[in-house]
Image (cartoon, rainbow, N blue to C red):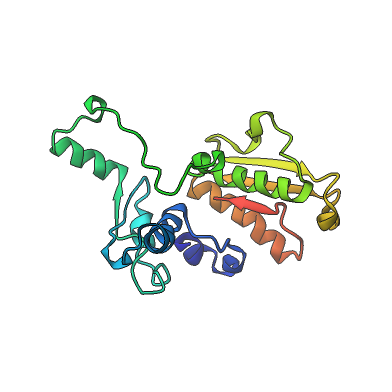
Length: 212
């Protein structure tokens, strides 16, 4: 969000309204989990996120990232590097700790949830869902793996044609959904400049959906 605000403010209306996974979890923890599952006051919950990006520290401070009661969705953010330093200072070697079972706080996760945090994961999860909703079928990729959007390459593109759609979505029959994934700020700028130039020329953007 901050990157778009500083570099492409005219594109803000095109951003997804979804919060980041970190803030989604914070919202669920202090909302659904606190009130429906545990029956406790959200003010008594402290949420700590372990994230690879320092930008998450600023994200948790955004004024709109709060519960209806005014509590921060995420109270503290530690980077993975900071966590590693803390473990080292405490002489804790994770490889020597006994194994434990995963806490099933709100049930099992989906396959899409597992890939959500990697480059191309959000795109793949969205495509899987959209394709199945519109056509009533799973995406035509082996094991649901949409390989064209996966990987650490700078920019990746994919196109999926919608055919034999359900009656409700017949307007999408024959539409080829074009998507792109950019890894890192430099590649994000390249994609956004293409979109910006298309907009200035009065032309549609080359892609329907972009993941940064």
